[in-house]
Amino acid sequence: MLTDRPTKLVPPVLARMAAWCLCLILVGVVVYFFVQGIARLSFVALPVAIALLLTALLFPLTRSLRQAGMRPIWATWLTMLAALAILVGTGWLVGVRATEEFPNLVKQVEATVADVQLWLTTGPLHLEQAQISEYVAEVLKLINAQRDAITGTVLSAGAVAVEVLASIVLLLFVTFFLLKDGERIWSWFLKGFGGMSPRVDRAGRAAWTTLSHYVQGSVLVAAVHGVVMGIVLAGMGVPLWAPLAVLIFFASFIPIVGIFFAGTVATLVTLGAKGIVYALIFIGILVVEQQLENHVLQPLIVGRALRFHPLAIIIVLSVGGILAGIAGAVVAVPIAAVIYRALPELRADPPALPPPSRTDTGGGGQDPPEDPAGPPEGESPEGESSEPEQGRSPAATRAGADTE
Picture 1 (cartoon, rainbow, N blue to C red):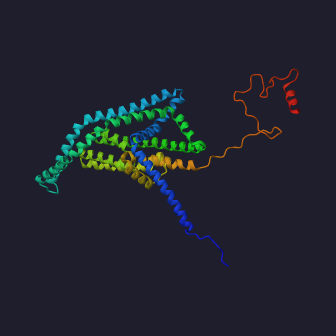
Picture 2: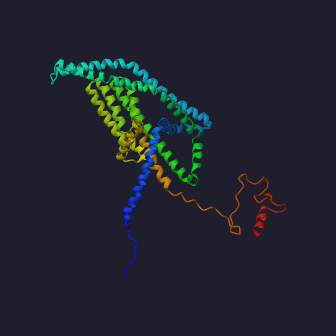
């Protein structure tokens, strides 16, 4: 006897795979259009992203000033002025040192070039002076060939100076209001999620905690790195040691790639000013210090906030650099860390609340809520006088209430 059974045209495994593929395609389309929108609004998105990082860095100072009794507006202004003073002081130090030491650097580079030419003619290579002059002429020719491109780059950079200034102004405004009214802005933002507000609130606070730990830890690690390398360069007598230390500090915010670039620049300056021996010594110290940073400072200070594998960091840096260049590489790791910490809180169920305290009143109903202002003076919560009755002691009053 034949039985009619529905024929399955697609195996269940293939159907599930197709459903997952459709979901991934939809997510990819949404992410693509989101990235395109951010790219078109980079004039606004980049200052806002940097303002969030600055707020995460500066908010502990603002919070301490508020806890000390200062009004929020004055605490915010004092925080902004302190940050501005640090930036201006650092810029002034770098400018003064660069102005004083640049002529000395030129003289030392010329002396090093002369020594190299002498070694090439009298050393094991036994090159002729004509050959060296030919090589130098080729290098100068290449530089002159790129002069037009360099000039065009400088002119294009001057054309966007107004946009850069506007971005800085926007960055300062966003940072100021986030420091002053961050909690109120977040509360207003949560109102748009309705019943999802508790989940979004937990996810946002977890993301903010992760971002704060990452930014503060990264600044501390970069400061240690810049100070150590600055002391090494100053001890070797390398010109422009202060600007190089600042360059190493800022480059440390770009994992892996930044320190490679800053270390190369510092090594070339050391090579041109002090010779190959000092350059090799500097490279050795830089490698040792970088290993200590990667295996001691980063895990202890930043690693607890990220808990990322180095392979994940490299992939995230590559994607951020491809999408948005240097700025994308800078913000890629904190964005990935924030998403990684916020998603579990967004999916998790809210924590179970303790059972409400109930007092049986004979009918099993709940007690009415108490007036937060409390009962009037001289009256009990039931409206009766709180004074003991005339001729009866407090104990007798309580006994009579128990028998009623």
